[in-house]
Length: 77
Image 1 (cartoon, rainbow, N blue to C red):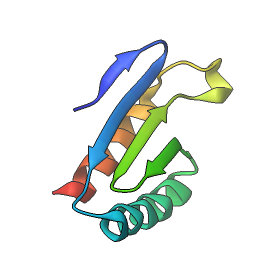
Image 2 (image 1 turned 45 degrees about the horizontal axis):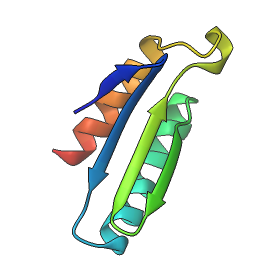
Image 3 (image 1 turned 30 degrees about the horizontal axis):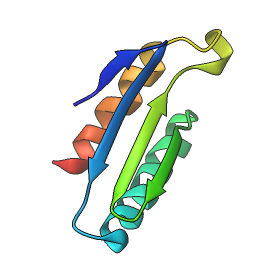
Image 4 (image 1 turned 90 degrees about the vertical axis):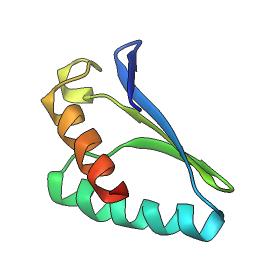
């Protein structure tokens, strides 16, 4: 689940393998582009880690971040 700390929403999601993790990142990229709100994220093998914050709002968590987090969760469903 998402954790809010240090003015960021964070979460790490583990997949069965690298291809699954990378495929998920491609889906998130499409959603993030449509929302015009892009995550700070990383991928190591089967794990994708997110840090969501709104730079235009002084690097704080805003409704944009919460909406993107929900959209990411919805892609997992």
